[in-house]
Length: 165
Image 1 (cartoon, rainbow, N blue to C red):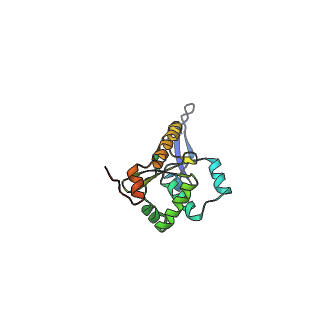
Image 2: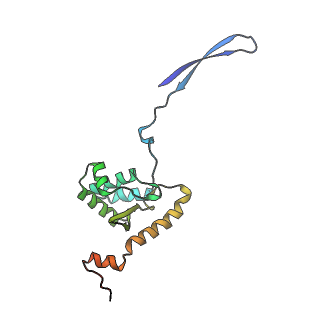
Image 3: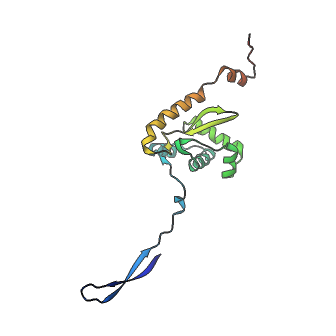
């Protein structure tokens, strides 16, 4: 809806006061413009349309993109994500596992008892456009760190202890 504004202006030739009516458009902010943006790969979106993930995984992916941090970090635990979207935590875990298997989400190293994740920049990214190439390198190193387990972590995963001789 436009707001009507009356403006008075003096005609310099005649000295007469002329009234003008101007219409000032009022813009209502779009509800989706409150937060930042994530750039998505068209090829990745087409891949999802042609070979869809499960409903659980799609809900998880949509929520992750909505809360994605810069440089594609996912700064939300699965428990908090479950609460955010009204899913049970095991279902969120199943969705995350599917997204990792499809290469949409990249699993990084453990920080304490928590796994770290990032959105694959080949799928989409939240970063300055100039930082995209660096982001690709960073994510590659991030994924590599997630695949490399120390000897102690491997033994722990197998339920064994390291014996120092």
